[in-house]
Amino acid sequence: MSREGADHALRTRVEERDRISGDLLDLESHTSYQLLKGAALRGRTLAAWSSAQQAMALMWSLYDAYRAVLRQAEKVRARRPRPGQAELEELTFLLAGPSVRLAAEAKPVEQRSLRPERDEALSLDETVARMDRAFGAVGRTLTEIDTAWTALLPRLESAAASQREIARLSADLGENPSGTRHQAELDRLRSAVTSDPLDSASAASALDRLCATLDSLLADLERADTLRRSYGPRHAALLELVGSVRDAEAEARRTHTVVAAKILLPPSTAPRATADRLAGDSAALDPPGAAPGAGWVERARRLATVERAADDALRKARATTSALLGLMARRDELRGRLMATQSKAIRVGLAEDPDAAGRFTRARQLLWTAPCDLNQAAEAVEHYQDAIHGGPR
Image 1 (cartoon, rainbow, N blue to C red):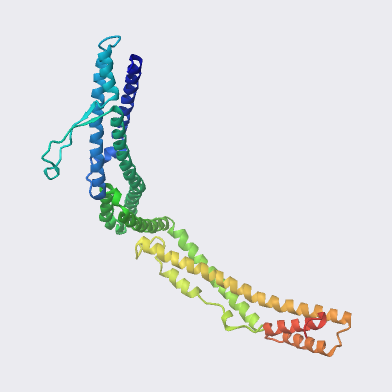
Image 2 (image 1 turned 180 degrees about the vertical axis):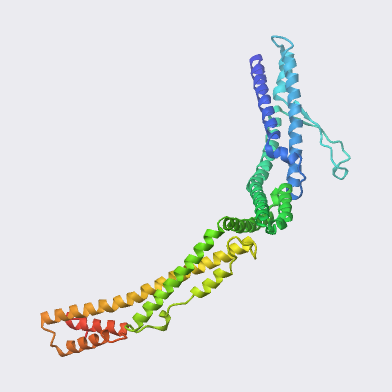
């Protein structure tokens, strides 16, 4: 190397040394690296971390040898302001030759040879390349472990928070703290995830099931707590709803009686009578202010069941009334179509046509006979319209 070339190579290597030092320190300060250093690992994660630690040890060993060569090169360069031939030859060897000595690895006896293990000589470029491969291996291991932890640890914390809330609400409501029986499972999963995140597929499935169970328990307790705070008004609203069902079913029965006298109805149109049963179910609930015969969770479930049944009964009773009135409207609509068609028959001179007149008489008889068979009446009106409008005969 020339003096200028040696100076340039030395400056470049010093900058490279400082950058590598920063990268190694950043790697060691990585959050997952620090967690793994103190963790009791097992399984796949233990094997991967052991390999990563070996790679990390190799990196520092190579880095120390790399720094030693650079320190020697700096000493050689500092001997004289203008290095002579001897210094340039030594700098050339240190900066470009196989100047890094890597001690032979100590092997277990079963892997040794009777021949002596030779130290390895590397150039600075080869040393950096080998450090880079080790750095990449450690980084990939940390990334894989960190990905698994990132996916599962927040969910474990969420499950733990749900369990704490379950315990609090259970105490407030006087319920048995059912969520505590899942503590052992939660502890087991936390241990599995923290000690072997690389083999946590089964733990993830079990965590899914546990979270679903805890969410369900928490939802029940939250509903029970909401009920406890507003039980009086909600119970009163239920009684009012049952009263509305009673009124709606009574109206459906009255409408059914009126319509059945005029329209031929199938048995399925008979209104249901559920108000008495709902009233009994409502009365069976503990009155406001009384100590619940059942826990608040069970009371909330029973109240919600009666509320849903009452809402359904009210909807069906009103739908029945609407459908019955619709049948009356259908009969009136058919009567109007028949009379409008007769008016047209008079205008076009078909009123006295025997076939048309016979069809008219049958349709009118069906529509003005009680109870009216709407299906037959609709068919008769259509036949009469066909006769007047030129449809099929």
